[in-house]
Length: 188
Length: 188
DNA sequence: GTCTATAGTGCGATAGAC
DNA sequence: GTCTATCGCACTATAGAC
Image (cartoon, rainbow over all chains, first blue to last red; front, side, top):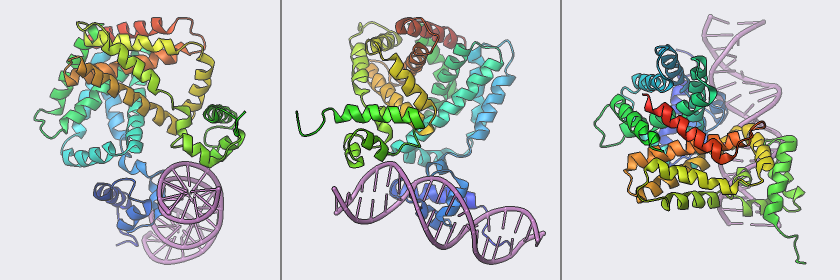
């Protein structure tokens, strides 16, 4: 056994989400989180650049999976078909995280700072997808449009998937939204 | 002449943008801004809830104009046509603000906190458009999809309009993007 | 208009593992 | 000895409370 308890990062994450649910994000100090995890505030900032990031760190793997799916889609596929493949590929990560995602969603929904952070993470994802579309040969403007539209569908599909009464799978929801967006955008 | 110099709000805004351009957002303290405007930091926080907001306050009128345009579009118009009317209506506000908008854009692009704030303002706008679409009788999901797609086009059109080499007008750019999005989204 | 709590940073000390 | 995770302390600026 080492000098310290293992998995400081995981303990900080768990302590943070628990405390945010219990007493709210703003009412929880970094010192509170660290204390519950058996650490100090100084150590918290070794793992996370700021307080919000404790709820968001770890999205890099998802982003990479979506970019990979986009790049490995058939070369002849239209931009939006490649984006659809990326959206679908995200489903692998959504196994049994529904309860976790619901608690996290409630915390984020209750705080403007956290909603801001969520939006910028999605914007980064959109940028990565757009870059990948350009790699596939898409024009810059089309790449950005398709990526942004894909992010809209991705975000709404995930939200709907974790909604309390929802029965359908993530992939089904995403496909439905993609088709509806196609129908809507066509009639300008 | 009154006891105080007039237009404290305008002076704070101008001082803030100037300082952000000169030395960067993070390197500028609220005390710096207030001093240049001939005021105190305490007064700054009477006008703006936080430091970032000095660059964003004032978008309510634009939002109201877009919502109004959406609601007064022909009742038989499709959701995306109403959204297109809203996007077009924003053009009234984009008279001779290009130089201001460029300086503001550069400041925001250089700072993650400011990009976050910009995104949440656009999310609020999207929510307002979606609510208005529901008022017009659209289904909730379609309303959100159309509003989010509209925000994508609105944001990209504005960015392109203030781009250095751009010659076309805002409305032309927005219409082009709307059509391109329609083409892309159709091929899923 | 002052006073205070908290976020976040820089630098260095410590205590083990190896 | 070196390496590394953690802690301690001093400090600034934002933001809100009184």
